[in-house]
Image (cartoon, rainbow, N blue to C red; front, side, top):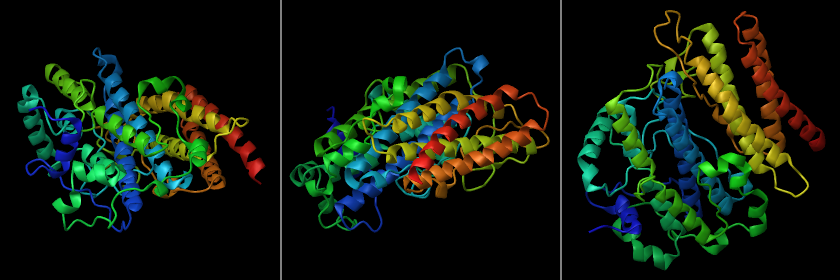
Length: 445
């Protein structure tokens, strides 16, 4: 018998054969604490998956991609960005603007509910198998079960542990948002897991939600992302019902439970089929990094001096993007102030123009002196740079990052390599951001 989406969500937590149990938030004494802890974990998972999918896309040679597999991977990554934005709206609903959270590695790494390890790796059958399992519904269509079983075994062999479904995190968040009577009718988790450290009152009350006026000043709208907003789901969360709707829509897009034809699960199965017909992807480094612990797991330290300079440029531009996003979210939306939209436009320009350009450069540069393997973008992230702060601190951080970038550009220029166009593009982007931020700094001081 075909299950309803709600039944599939329930079973992903409690089914005796397939359920993964309750995602735990240590030290959460209230439903609000528990929900915000899980939403932070969800934000880190979405952030990590987005970067992994981008790296996989970067590993595909654009001159040998007639089936547009890189485009498919980047589209899925864009959709993860939409999920990340929706999670920010859910955090705003519970905690106000200081609750925005764009970390990637503080909670997720080592958490039992983390779907897969954060490894930046080129496209392979192994990597695609892990993405299939992470996005897999509890109820797999019978026609695809044998294939999925094979991919589960492949993913487990590669990782050394059983990957988890993303949907388990969202199923638990949904249970916390439901009114008590509806939640208990769906599943009585306290009775099913009497030893689980759930709060005494594990369901959110209306008093846990922020006032509409606060939400209106800071919520993330699809139109903040311009023309790209039509390419991903970004939902509002202004009260209990809209929050539940947003969670269901994320689920329906394929993060473990909805089973829609356009789900990420289905799209990765299609990519597996394409790979089986004709393998694609270049043998670039796994998790290239300058600072072990700030990038992907299974790191490959980059020691070639010239490559290292470009890798630092890419990492700093990535950190600049994240800090700029936090700044834009923290800045209130007003009718006579364009700063929020200006910051969003800067972020969009860097995503559209800078990161593709930097990936193209880095995938053609060596990791070490022997040149035996090519590097790739590192997406190294310094957690202290993206801790929650006030607007003045976000401005200071961005200006400091750009000061370091200016030094790197000059050092790269002195090597004599023909990268004039790339450096000009980077400097133009930084000048636009610096001008905007200095205007704001003058207003703050």
